[in-house]
Image (cartoon, rainbow, N blue to C red; front, side):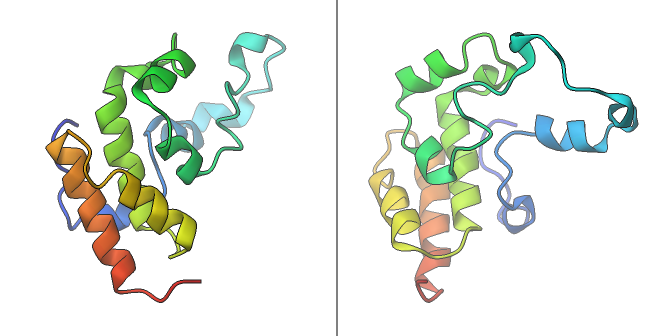
Length: 129
């Protein structure tokens, strides 16, 4: 969905960045699925091990390169950052999370800035771990 995510929904999103993971978990047919033997179906670019802080640091060029051929690329870099900002806002308050958010506080996209500001405000109200 383009634009801002309603504030009342942001805490409910948790750490989800893109909806496909939930669809895969909820799909009743996936209980019959087996791991594919084709590399095309493997997790790409370490996405299955990356932290939100790492993903939030990707430049637009890195986003485009790493998501080439992937449905995720359709949302674009700004929405990717918006979604990760929400995930970081819902994460535990750590110096790494706060530093990552501050690094994007002046992002050129106003929607990204809005979501980063929201996330930083949530962390300002929490003690750091």
